[in-house]
Amino acid sequence: MGESPRQRRVADRIREVVAQMAGGRIKDPRLGFITVTEVRVTGDLHHATVFYTVLGDDAAAADTAAALASAKGLIRSEVGKVLGLRLTPSLDFQLDQLPDGAHRIEEALQQAAARDAELAAKAAGASYAGEADPYRHPAEDDDSDGLAADDDGDGDRFYFGDPGGGDALA
Image (cartoon, rainbow, N blue to C red):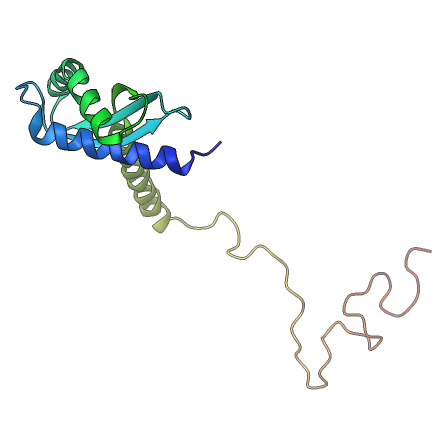
Protein backbone atom coordinates (compact mmCIF):
# COMPACT_ATOMS: atom_id res chain seq x y z
CA MET A 1 0.00 0.00 0.00
CA GLY A 2 1.28 3.50 -0.78
CA GLU A 3 2.15 6.07 1.78
CA SER A 4 -0.23 8.84 2.71
CA PRO A 5 0.47 12.50 1.95
CA ARG A 6 1.02 13.11 5.65
CA GLN A 7 3.65 10.37 5.83
CA ARG A 8 5.36 11.89 2.80
CA ARG A 9 5.39 15.38 4.34
CA VAL A 10 6.74 14.11 7.66
CA ALA A 11 9.41 12.05 5.89
CA ASP A 12 10.51 15.03 3.78
CA ARG A 13 10.72 17.26 6.85
CA ILE A 14 12.74 14.66 8.77
CA ARG A 15 15.11 14.35 5.80
CA GLU A 16 15.65 18.13 5.79
CA VAL A 17 16.27 18.31 9.54
CA VAL A 18 18.71 15.38 9.57
CA ALA A 19 20.62 16.81 6.59
CA GLN A 20 20.89 20.23 8.25
CA MET A 21 22.03 18.72 11.52
CA ALA A 22 24.63 16.51 9.81
CA GLY A 23 25.82 19.48 7.78
CA GLY A 24 26.78 21.67 10.70
CA ARG A 25 25.19 21.10 14.08
CA ILE A 26 26.72 17.70 14.91
CA LYS A 27 30.36 18.29 15.82
CA ASP A 28 31.50 14.66 15.97
CA PRO A 29 34.81 14.25 14.10
CA ARG A 30 33.81 10.71 13.07
CA LEU A 31 30.94 12.06 11.02
CA GLY A 32 31.90 11.97 7.36
CA PHE A 33 30.40 13.72 4.39
CA ILE A 34 26.91 12.21 4.25
CA THR A 35 23.91 12.58 2.01
CA VAL A 36 20.46 11.72 3.31
CA THR A 37 18.88 9.86 0.41
CA GLU A 38 15.51 8.80 1.78
CA VAL A 39 13.37 8.66 4.91
CA ARG A 40 10.62 6.10 5.38
CA VAL A 41 8.02 6.66 8.07
CA THR A 42 5.61 4.04 9.37
CA GLY A 43 1.88 4.60 8.96
CA ASP A 44 1.39 5.57 12.61
CA LEU A 45 4.36 8.02 12.42
CA HIS A 46 6.08 6.35 15.39
CA HIS A 47 9.19 5.15 13.61
CA ALA A 48 11.35 6.61 10.84
CA THR A 49 14.20 4.93 8.98
CA VAL A 50 16.78 7.36 7.59
CA PHE A 51 18.84 6.10 4.64
CA TYR A 52 22.15 7.84 3.95
CA THR A 53 25.29 7.50 1.84
CA VAL A 54 28.82 8.34 2.88
CA LEU A 55 31.60 9.66 0.71
CA GLY A 56 34.63 7.46 1.28
CA ASP A 57 35.51 3.87 2.05
CA ASP A 58 34.11 1.31 4.48
CA ALA A 59 36.02 2.78 7.42
CA ALA A 60 34.41 6.18 6.83
CA ALA A 61 30.99 4.49 6.65
CA ALA A 62 31.60 2.70 9.96
CA ASP A 63 32.78 5.93 11.65
CA THR A 64 29.75 7.82 10.33
CA ALA A 65 27.41 5.09 11.58
CA ALA A 66 28.95 5.36 15.05
CA ALA A 67 28.66 9.16 15.00
CA LEU A 68 25.00 9.03 13.96
CA ALA A 69 24.23 6.44 16.65
CA SER A 70 25.78 8.65 19.33
CA ALA A 71 23.93 11.77 18.06
CA LYS A 72 20.58 9.99 17.65
CA GLY A 73 19.05 11.63 20.75
CA LEU A 74 20.09 15.14 19.68
CA ILE A 75 18.73 14.58 16.17
CA ARG A 76 15.47 13.12 17.49
CA SER A 77 14.89 16.06 19.84
CA GLU A 78 15.43 18.51 16.97
CA VAL A 79 13.04 16.52 14.78
CA GLY A 80 10.46 16.66 17.58
CA LYS A 81 10.81 20.44 17.89
CA VAL A 82 10.46 21.01 14.16
CA LEU A 83 7.61 18.58 13.52
CA GLY A 84 5.48 19.51 16.51
CA LEU A 85 3.84 16.07 16.64
CA ARG A 86 2.40 14.58 19.80
CA LEU A 87 4.88 11.72 19.60
CA THR A 88 8.33 12.17 18.07
CA PRO A 89 9.22 9.25 15.80
CA SER A 90 12.11 7.04 16.81
CA LEU A 91 14.97 7.20 14.32
CA ASP A 92 16.92 4.38 12.77
CA PHE A 93 19.90 5.13 10.52
CA GLN A 94 20.79 2.74 7.71
CA LEU A 95 23.54 2.98 5.14
CA ASP A 96 21.90 3.09 1.71
CA GLN A 97 23.04 0.22 -0.52
CA LEU A 98 21.58 1.75 -3.68
CA PRO A 99 24.85 3.31 -4.97
CA ASP A 100 26.68 -0.01 -4.59
CA GLY A 101 23.92 -1.85 -6.44
CA ALA A 102 23.93 0.76 -9.20
CA HIS A 103 27.72 0.40 -9.50
CA ARG A 104 27.42 -3.40 -9.85
CA ILE A 105 24.72 -2.98 -12.51
CA GLU A 106 26.89 -0.48 -14.39
CA GLU A 107 29.82 -2.92 -14.36
CA ALA A 108 27.59 -5.74 -15.63
CA LEU A 109 26.32 -3.52 -18.47
CA GLN A 110 29.89 -2.62 -19.44
CA GLN A 111 30.88 -6.31 -19.50
CA ALA A 112 27.84 -7.15 -21.64
CA ALA A 113 28.70 -4.35 -24.07
CA ALA A 114 32.28 -5.64 -24.34
CA ARG A 115 31.02 -9.18 -25.05
CA ASP A 116 28.58 -7.82 -27.65
CA ALA A 117 31.40 -5.94 -29.38
CA GLU A 118 33.56 -9.07 -29.35
CA LEU A 119 30.72 -11.12 -30.87
CA ALA A 120 30.07 -8.46 -33.53
CA ALA A 121 33.77 -8.53 -34.47
CA LYS A 122 33.63 -12.31 -34.88
CA ALA A 123 30.42 -12.10 -36.91
CA ALA A 124 31.89 -9.50 -39.29
CA GLY A 125 34.17 -12.05 -40.95
CA ALA A 126 31.72 -14.95 -40.87
CA SER A 127 29.87 -16.40 -43.84
CA TYR A 128 26.66 -18.38 -44.12
CA ALA A 129 26.84 -22.16 -43.80
CA GLY A 130 24.34 -22.58 -46.63
CA GLU A 131 22.66 -20.13 -48.93
CA ALA A 132 22.40 -16.52 -47.85
CA ASP A 133 18.61 -16.62 -48.28
CA PRO A 134 17.33 -20.16 -47.58
CA TYR A 135 13.64 -19.38 -48.24
CA ARG A 136 11.84 -20.18 -51.50
CA HIS A 137 10.38 -17.30 -53.44
CA PRO A 138 7.54 -17.47 -56.03
CA ALA A 139 8.68 -17.75 -59.64
CA GLU A 140 9.30 -14.46 -61.36
CA ASP A 141 7.23 -13.36 -64.39
CA ASP A 142 9.29 -13.65 -67.58
CA ASP A 143 6.62 -13.01 -70.22
CA SER A 144 4.53 -9.91 -70.82
CA ASP A 145 1.01 -11.27 -70.22
CA GLY A 146 1.10 -10.25 -66.52
CA LEU A 147 0.64 -13.80 -65.25
CA ALA A 148 3.21 -15.64 -63.21
CA ALA A 149 5.18 -18.30 -65.04
CA ASP A 150 3.43 -21.15 -63.20
CA ASP A 151 -0.06 -19.67 -63.44
CA ASP A 152 -2.41 -21.78 -65.60
CA GLY A 153 -5.03 -19.05 -65.86
CA ASP A 154 -7.46 -20.31 -63.23
CA GLY A 155 -6.46 -17.67 -60.66
CA ASP A 156 -4.45 -19.80 -58.26
CA ARG A 157 -0.75 -19.22 -58.27
CA PHE A 158 0.27 -22.58 -56.90
CA TYR A 159 -1.21 -25.84 -58.11
CA PHE A 160 -0.89 -29.37 -56.99
CA GLY A 161 -0.97 -32.49 -59.08
CA ASP A 162 -0.85 -32.76 -62.86
CA PRO A 163 -0.38 -29.40 -64.62
CA GLY A 164 -2.52 -30.64 -67.49
CA GLY A 165 -5.63 -30.67 -65.31
CA GLY A 166 -5.76 -34.35 -64.52
CA ASP A 167 -5.58 -35.64 -60.98
CA ALA A 168 -2.15 -37.11 -60.38
CA LEU A 169 -3.21 -38.75 -57.13
CA ALA A 170 -5.94 -40.97 -58.62
